[in-house]
Image (cartoon, one colour):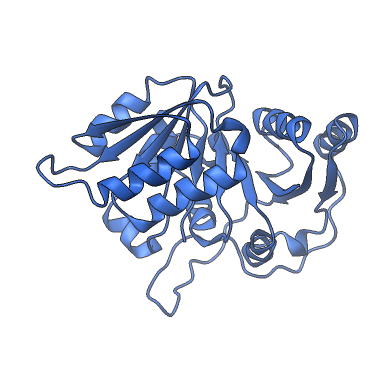
Length: 270
């Protein structure tokens, strides 16, 4: 049994994310914790390591939340599909610190990817949710609102330990998907460089994914454009492991994929 967190803003959960959870539960029963985050404008803190950003508040002192029609609908869906669930209704527990604690004791966080875009500018991702993805302790699956169930997988590899970790975590969490056609894509902006640990990563991926092929992408931009055309795939990548400060200097690879593609994206970092 997997323990899953479903996070969403202002009681407006992603229907596609809930549909995916129902399918996962039908395949193997899971335990769901539904967390409704609250949009708030807070003072930008500066942390001891020099990072800063518009983080979700670490503490709150607010009254208990009254369930809305949406939350009642979510509860009904869980009951109808036989999903064991717990619904967070106390706003005091819905802070970044509270969600961090939840993620320490969960296998996976699921969130609707369209909810993390700025409303006016879809090329940019909401800073609060970037911070959330950076600080959670479990892997995350970002689900677009309209997508087809994946018929193939793409494993993004750039030689980093985070990518290897993400591939391994995905294999453990989604054994039912390991028989899909799988592409291991090495991505490097320097086409002349050697593939780091080529044999080792090939052996690891082949041990889990039964229909594996390998390709080389000459740049992250090329890969992003190519990924945007793969409508029925799921992407596995390691990212959001850098500090918020470095995020300001260099755009995240996963950010571009999430903003420009309409495929589920699995993200894990150590």
